[in-house]
Length: 279
Ligand SMILES: NC(=O)c1ccc[n+]([C@@H]2O[C@H](COP(=O)([O-])OP(=O)(O)OC[C@H]3O[C@@H](n4cnc5c(N)ncnc54)[C@H](OP(=O)(O)O)[C@@H]3O)[C@@H](O)[C@H]2O)c1
Image (tube, rainbow, N blue to C red; front, side, top):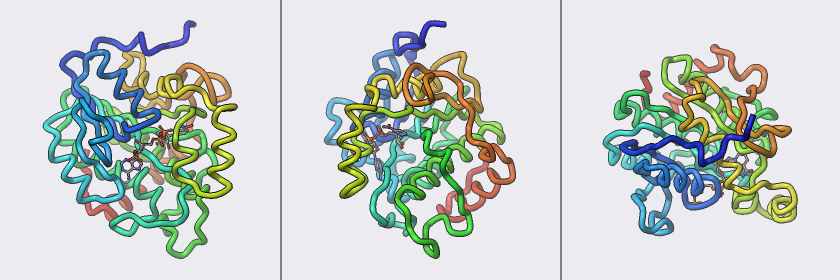
């Protein structure tokens, strides 16, 4: 079968898409393609000045007050792409005291989705961006914010991306139209802007060699967000070794689809964010 491409995105005229993290990398491609196919795109970015000429609004996922303000500014949406993310920073804490990666990658998007939920239009889809590294993750719901555990940048990233999967599948089980995507290995700022020292240096060397263009890495999320063939509960990733290539349906790691785990993550996320999420 021919590879699904951005040219296969259907006409999105009249649709409103909210995309987080559009200042660079995959988010910039996702927002650009959705707009090119007719959608009105609301860009959720930390600094709206860096994406001039579009409907950009301030969204800092590391501060739940800012998340609430952003959500209140959105009247309705057909597509929400929870794309923004950070990888492997040294230990730091969000405004509300969460470990940065769990706070930004998962809790910020959980709160955003919950607050936007009453504003969804009929048939609205939520696409949450995970990573192949979710496969190495473990969700420690007794200490998700590394208060008692020794901090590991890699462990915390994998945990946050595992949480993205557990959240996306639980939203689907609760009746939402919820899909997951991951880009494989794509060239972006991700591997160099979050980590420090040796980790960033490795990213600078590896990216040009092993990363696929962001335009290709964005295809799983674009397929999940727009294709009539993408169904709720699906996880979409690249075709070749889940690292490179066009979008295909892939399997989440064993255990992430456990309904008990989904329920626990949901309850912990509601408690930590203080945002109830009734689907
Ligand atoms: N590239 C890959 O190979 C790869 C692999 C697996 C998964 N992913 C996932 O793909 C997604 C996009 O990453 P990317 O590769 O495109 O990286 P990127 O170029 O670094 O883009 C990340 C985006 O997230 C935004 N962001 C970071 N912290 C934020 C915060 N606190 N609040 C709001 N926005 C924030 C950044 O905005 P600023 O400009 O404000 O920093 C930027 O727009 C992430 O979820 C990442 O985990 C990427």
